[in-house]
Length: 272
Image 1 (cartoon, helix red, strand yellow):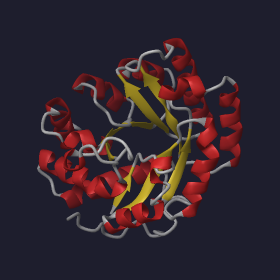
Image 2 (cartoon, rainbow, N blue to C red):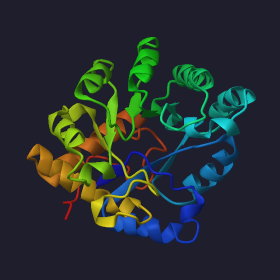
Image 3 (cartoon, helix red, strand yellow):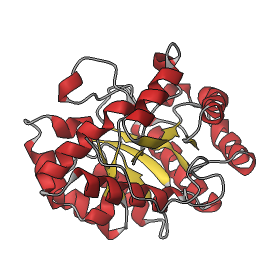
Image 4 (tube, rainbow, N blue to C red):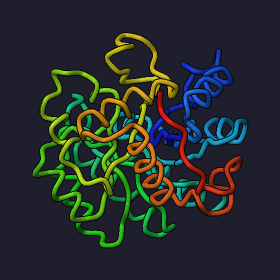
């Protein structure tokens, strides 16, 4: 069985067939999904989606790409929200120095405030780091004890090593399936098993077999098979490793973790 560590399953792209997508995902062996937020305006909808179907786990935060939608008061509102609402993480938060027009100082302030909230609430963080891995790592180093994942990691081995020193996880998804992604593939083959998470990032970042289409969690096994080939391991072993890592990071073995899987110790199904 698989856990999709990053899926925007609450967005309108899934409104027309969300239940069918969830069914296809379960048939493909995806038992649970972590759903990170984008803006404060979407938190209520995210909560509704996460409670409407089994195996969906919400994270709440403020995505850096949508900086212009955020307000200074959102941090206090997020603090209050996390005190009331179940969540497995703070996020999606982070830094994006690729998109033009996003104020870097404002991004830093918003990101660091969310890191502090994660420490306050004893939650992991789900981090977006595009052309900003070094700056993200610097902020993490200033907050000992923080845990989390840098999703859709695309940095260098040296940058990965610094994150591994902080016991962070690295999320790998659809980009891994493209043969031209040679640096990413080499990194995936090298990474220690303890750091691996797999993700769809649906509806974005489809793998090679579905290029140009809306991505969905049911296609996560393609990422697993690619990762297994690169590491000379079986898909079953990759599923076991990444599932265990996700359970540990997001504490899904606690009450209200994976509601339809109370045992958490059964053998994962073989990925076809």
